[in-house]
Image (cartoon, rainbow, N blue to C red):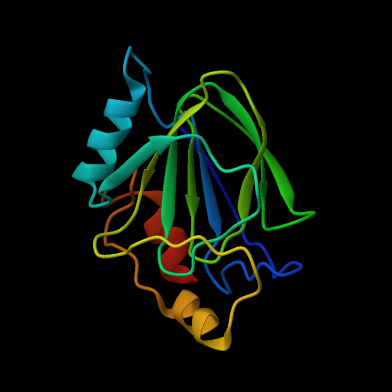
Length: 167
């Protein structure tokens, strides 16, 4: 598994996170098997990120002010824009994982037929859908939202811990 970390500055009306980078885990699952969605759900749950849904990714720009989000790509491929309108484009495919700190804008530009993602969040964090500029209170919440002690993919030794604890 290879990981890539990058920060996104505020862009247009999307705040992005002031300190924490986005993490892309390329080929996070060694083998996809017949039910990669269940494999992602079990992995996320085991690492303290309870899964909450299976679906695609919205085709409109949005961010979450109340939760960090991990997305496990169970089937298909997609081109995403991260960071808000005019942001960074990334390609994801089955077996990849995208870890988005609170405030990070994201949308799907296009996806293959059958594209399926598992979404999970830290315990006690309920996701919201924000489609306009944040208030000062939202910016403060985004900046101070705690994150779990385990990386959602690799547990206690995962790259999230190194990248996020240094931020």
